[in-house]
Length: 400
Image 1: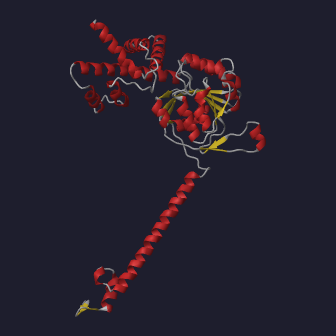
Image 2: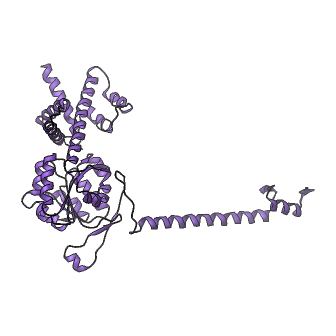
Image 3: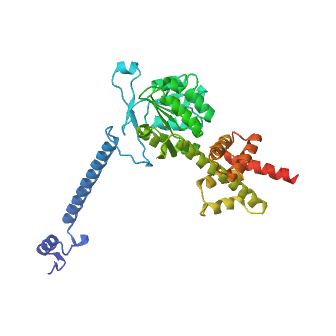
């Protein structure tokens, strides 16, 4: 076909060529009127596509934010939920019956006992998810940040448990955990059928069983749920829950555990969660001592300890703990994420657990002695990585 005759446009040939689509006409060959028309059509087409994308995005947002969304849970899954406050009537509010209904089905008010290094960020994450939280702490001033966010305060563990459907407890040691649960004005005094008590403290299995027995004697349900993780994972909602006890309570509070943690394990009977936590922390404490020895040895033979940290971080023995703690240990700085006194306590409990089943753990026993030395040096409230100072002290004493 001939498209041009003496540089004049052949309209008939152009129309047939454009209609066929088999031989596109270059833009520069089109008359200005036709070019402008095609550009206008293109703009309209782009506008329609953008409008459809915007509508789809708004529909997706509406679906995700709907209060009726229910998401399936799998054990060990990572799921963040949001809980919205609801009330049925002013009379039920006055009676203390108002709770909240989470978007994964949890209903009720949540109590939290113990707002230390771990408890405060855990309770804070529940509040950020929209949960109705009532708190208690021996030192009331530690409750102030949460109270400013809208949390309620009660004067005793018993009053918290009485006003809440599920109560969490994060205490420093077995003695504190038992006293808060079973002592005078303890949580057990506020428990009743239908309520649940979740102890996320690190205690020995015997203490956990005693607490569980006292709680269940009231008709309430008990779940032990010690956590693996320190301050930063608690703040970021990345804890690991090691649960055991009442399985129905475990399923009931699973949405709350998923707000505070990245994974959860159900381990069966009460005592198994406590035992798992002690095994994990026994390994962690021993690893830290070995790591500290490596840093000091490298410096002694003329190596750069920072390079040691980097080499380890790229090998098979890499662990986040080494990369996180190593640089500050080289500088002799120990910002507290997991107090040294708690690591020593966990090693002591692990040794007792091993003794009860006649299992020798000589490495952990040696590590425990070093943590005791570090405590005697006034480092109890420093991070557990300060155990390196005990090794330095022993090195200096051997030189004299």
